[in-house]
Length: 172
Image 1: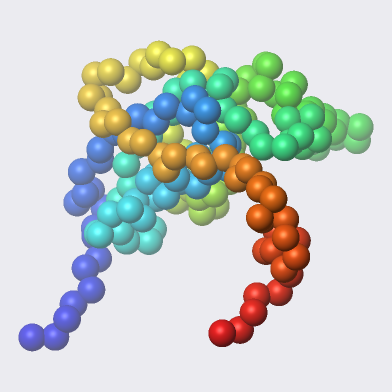
Image 2: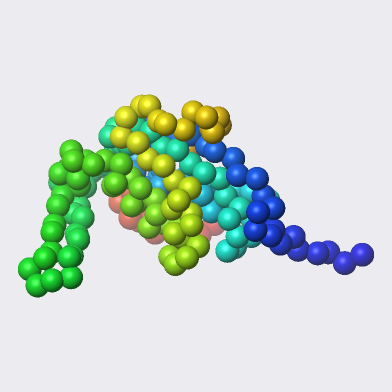
């Protein structure tokens, strides 16, 4: 019997609600993990273009971490469409006013654009605080990969030929 590729049909895969606590996690690392779960790429029955992913609830968006000095240097730009209608705000200003928007935009920029991406955005819920309004969906705890942070540089790592200095790899 020849091998047959499984293609999921719309409505065939049951949606599971997942809960992620964003406290202390890096914004980009969290966004890639959540986008993968939204699209369903963690499932063996993943089918492109079919809603095969899970719904995700992200809490503690106000306690997200940005590495380096991105909080002050990185900006969010919006244009109204009119001359002089460009609004530029730093990530620090955005975190002070609406951290949930910053987290949700980072996640939604990692999913496909178009009709499929818009349907995925309906399955994402982001809350700035620790509480959420979706307890009746009985979300399953989803722990995004633990962020290792920055690796401390030791004296041995700073020796000549170190990968930290950009030295080329030696062929064996």
